[in-house]
Amino acid sequence: MLREILRYKQRLDNLFSKISAFSGRPAEFELRSHWTRYLCVLVSGFLEVSIYEIYTAYAKDKSAPNIANYIEAQLEGFQNPKMGKILQVVEAFNPKWAEEIQNLPDYLKIKNAVDSVVANRHKIAHGEDVDIEYNRLRSWYADVYKLIVILYDQCGLT
Image (cartoon, helix red, strand yellow):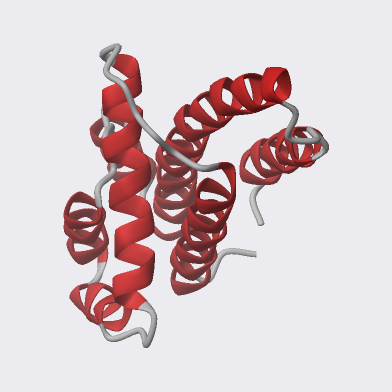
């Protein structure tokens, strides 16, 4: 896996483990809720960064420098990575890859996780109320990471 992705994942894993230690007392419940919202923003960012890192590394490995530079410039503004948007990027590289993702047995679960993380991140960023449970976010994070591994493996990066 690419160094930047591993670094980001390690940071998230560390934060998730710290938050899971909260006991559930009323004061800690509120603190855990705030941390869960913060983690939701970070998980969305993790997905954005991972897609950028994977496809720019792929472009650098497989194409001429000017093409790789163009792809890097196009992906710099990649934000709010809902599944439809991710599939557009994947399909631009290889339509078969997008089809493979859509044919995964747990595609709908992964899609729901990705779309939920991004939708909640958007609400959080705009000051709206969200009701995300820690365990639900942890499950979404696992599915987001599953997608990141699939994207990485499709590109055949080493």
